[in-house]
Structures are given as structure tokens and as C-alpha cells.
Image (tube, rainbow, N blue to C red; front, side, top):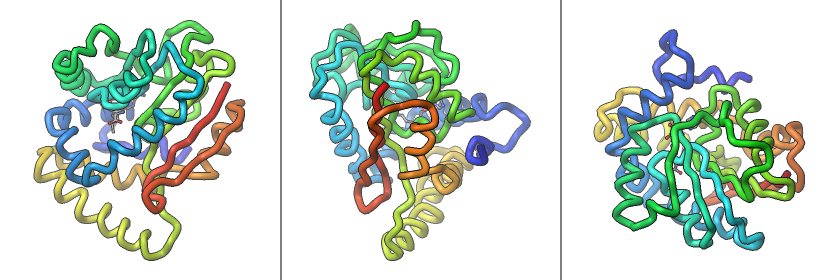
Length: 242
Ligand SMILES: C[S@@+](CC[C@H](N)C(=O)[O-])C[C@H]1O[C@@H](n2cnc3c(N)ncnc32)[C@H](O)[C@@H]1O
């Protein structure tokens, strides 16, 4: 798919290698920039996602593309037995591990190296899987989503949080300006990675959102799929079941 070909550095390395390198580069500044660029709104978005899986009281939860573990930490509020976070960037997870230790959540939440597309957990392992701002970075979106389907228990829930493109012309104009000029400028200034925040803009523009993303989930056999736009359509939550 076209969006799978959007890469951070446009070198000959595979997208997965480039994405891992990019997140290793920005790991130390990721949380700070997330809060600065979204004006703290991203925290509320993850809270909304976790509320959506609370009703089924999931006991074993997987946070895919966990990064610095913010989504896994939010899931801890559900009092599950176990949370596993997986990511391809050791740098991001090392920042996450420090937070888990400080929050005394390191016994509940473990972070493991793993690529969403090739995770080796057994079929039907997880009650719930969450992915925050991760699917856009997969090398092969459908392969990743299919693998998550395989390891989700029947009746288990998948919740995906991802940036989207607003449809209202005024919001779209402001968002396009902000994402095209302000985000790459601030990102470059603070992260010292020239490409990371331009890649963010390019990958969000190319990514299928709203109904188009639901169509992909349906094609993979997910059931009861739905989405909810957040903050005037700049992000969306996708919910699905196996
Ligand atoms: C924008 S960060 C999101 C981190 C966190 N989920 C959050 O909500 O802030 C995206 C993360 O996805 C990871 N990632 C990208 N492709 C991945 C893949 N195929 N499998 C696992 N993790 C991946 C990156 O290394 C990075 O840490």
C-alpha cells in the first residue's frame, strides 16, 4: 500500500530499520515533544481509549508500539494481571523502563523487543490489544494488523489511536499549516533529528483514516468495527473485536 512506502530517511534500509533508528534518535525528547506539540491533549486521548476496553475487564493486555509506555501505564488503571509492551526501538523502551520503575509499575508492565508484524506470541493470547500512534509506522500495515488479529483472543478487543486528517475546511487549513510548518520546525529544534517530524507530517497525510481504515480492519476479519473522531478530527480511535 502507498503509505507503507513513506519512510523517515529515504535510504535503502527497510522502513522498519529507519523507523527504529528515528525513534532511537528522538527517544530522550519524545515525551516532552508529545506534550508540547499536542498541548497535552494526547493524554486525554489515551484515557478515552482505555475507557473503551474497561467494560470487558481485560486481564492480559498487549500495548503494541509501546514507545515510552504511556499507553501501557494508562492501561494499568484497569487492574489487569499483566501488561506487555512491545516495540522495535530499544531507545524508546529504555525511557519507558525508567518511568515504570519510578511509578512502581515494573512488576505489572514488562517491555519487550518485538515487531508487530512478526510477534511470536501464541494464537488467542490477549484479552485486549492497544496501539497508540504505531500503525502508521508499520512497514506492512495489513501484515501487522493480521498478526494482531491472530494473537487476540476470540471476543478480545483491539483499540487503535492514530492521527487523522480533519474534514472541516477551517480546521483542515489550520491543521495543515501547523503540521506542515510548526511541527517540523519545533521537532527539528528540540529533537535534533532533521527528518523525524517531517516524516510525521508526511506519514499522517498518506495514511488511510476514518472509514478507509475501518475498511482495512473489516478486510482482515475484525468484527464490530467503529471509529470516533477526536479533537475536531485531528485524531481518531478505532475499535474492533475478534
Ligand atoms: C509515535 S511512537 C508511539 C509511542 C506510544 N505508543 C505512544 O502512544 O506515545 C511510535 C512507536 O512505534 C514503534 N514502532 C513502529 N513500528 C513498529 C512495529 N512494526 N512494531 C513495533 N513497534 C513499532 C516505534 O519504535 C515507536 O516507539
